[in-house]
Length: 118
Length: 112
Image (cartoon, rainbow over all chains, first blue to last red; front, top):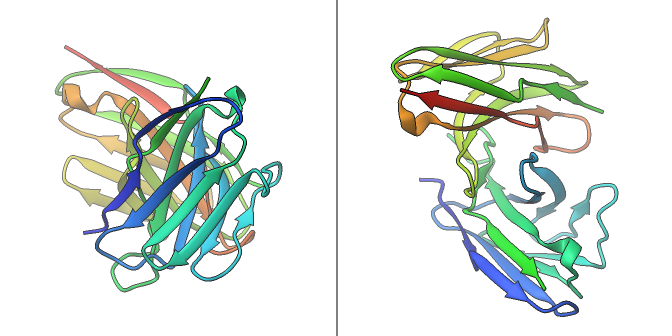
């Protein structure tokens, strides 16, 4: 149980284009989903928290107009990197948690999406 | 805010036991998590402590002392595949719900 998928796993794009990353909870309903970014040899940095049906809460320093988050259902959240630039190249990881019984509100992570902006 | 400290690197021998420490400072403590992350992959959940004491799960155990702001992850019978980064993460009631703050991770290298 508690499987989270992400798509795509790899994306290479030109500077100025937009990239959409999907995060899905496959076998549970995720009341909350989180988006992280991780640069090489660094820890995970939380970008935003999203609850189904409401606006995402962004961490300080994260531009909400650049990183658009949509959490339309209890099993799907999307992150769109708009007008991507080379400095946006990173490993983007989503996680999902549930207040359901047995989950202890543990965050379960997707496999990550590696973004390279040329 | 929160402050989480853990050693940057550790080396241990296959078959041995290793303890990875984590100290934290936070207000509204609401749980401590340990995750394992292999290079290029996403973190996988190892353990969760919210009360003081030891939680054992196979070769992995995690300990928490809330009064000392201290936790450790104990790995027994080390295997080569245990070479990975181990992330300590703290959840706090302040700042909204279920948000985790991660330490920088401890890179464990298991040698023959």
